[in-house]
View 1 (tube, rainbow, N blue to C red):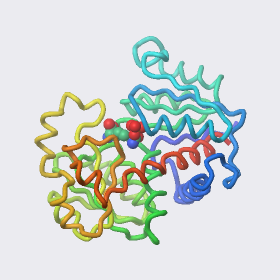
View 2: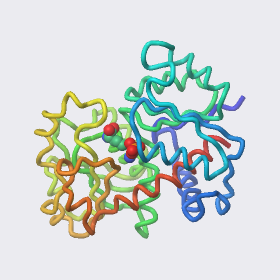
View 3: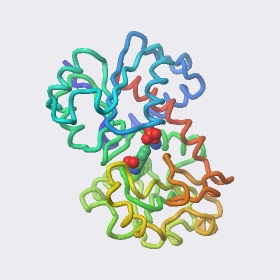
View 4: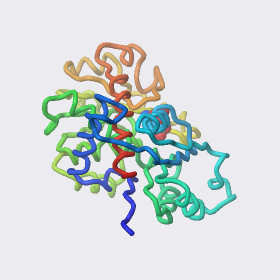
Length: 305
Ligand code: CP
Ligand code: NVA
C-alpha cells in the first residue's frame, strides 16, 4: 500500500510540490468547481476534526469539498471521542481511516496530531496546531505569487509574535527564495532548532530584528498575527506588555512606504494591528483570505487523489 500523503508542516513538502499546489490553486481560483483545474472529488469524503474554533479554514475545506463534488463531515471538540480522555487518539485515527478518504485536524497540541497521523491509514492534514498552520502559509505564498511579478528575493517582514502561522509562513517563504525578516522581542523568537530547520528549507533567508522600524524598512510586505494565540489565554497580560512596541500602525508603516499589509485573521483590532491599518488602503487581508479556498481545494485534490 502506498504511504498516504500527510501534510503536517511545510517541511513535509518540496519546492516542486509547493509549485504544483500553487498552479492548481490558480486554476481553482478561476473556477472553484474545478473544471479549469481538472479537479474532481466526487465520491470523496473527508472528516474535519476541530478541537479549536475556526472560520476560514473550516469554510475553505467544507465549501471547497462541496464545490468539487465531494463531502466533508465536520466535528467540533466534544463531538468526537478523543481529546477528553474517552478514546486513545491512535484508536480514533484507525477508526476514522475506515470511513473517509482523508482527515483534517485542528488541535492545540502538535504532538496529538503526530500521534493521530502515526496510526492513520489515510492522509492527515494539519488544519492548525500550536506549532504550524501550513494551509494558511501555502495560501499566503500563492497570494504573494499572484501579487508580485517575482517573489525571489522579495523582502517580507513579520512583526509581532512568532506564532504557528509565523513558523509556517517563514518556512514556505525560505523554501520559495523569499527574504524573511522577523521583528519580535528576543525572548519570543523561535527556538534554535526551529530557526536552523527553517533556514535549511531553501534559498531564502531568515533574519531577526529587535526593532520593528529597522525591520520593515524597504519591505514589500508587513505581516502580523495575534499576540495571544488560541491556548495562550493565561499569558494575555504579559504578552500585551511584551508586544506593545510591535503594533502594526500608521507610524510603523511610514517606515515602509511601499509595503502591503497582511494578516492571517482573525485580528485583534487595536492590539497587533490598528483598525485604520486593517481597514486602510495598504491592507490586503480580504484578498489574502480569499486565497484560502482555492489553496485548500488544491490541498484536498493533492491528498485525496
Ligand atoms: N486564518 C485562519 O486559519 O482562520 P480561522 O482560524 O478562522 O480558520
Ligand atoms: N496564531 C493564531 C492563528 C489563528 C489562525 C492562533 O493560533 O490562534
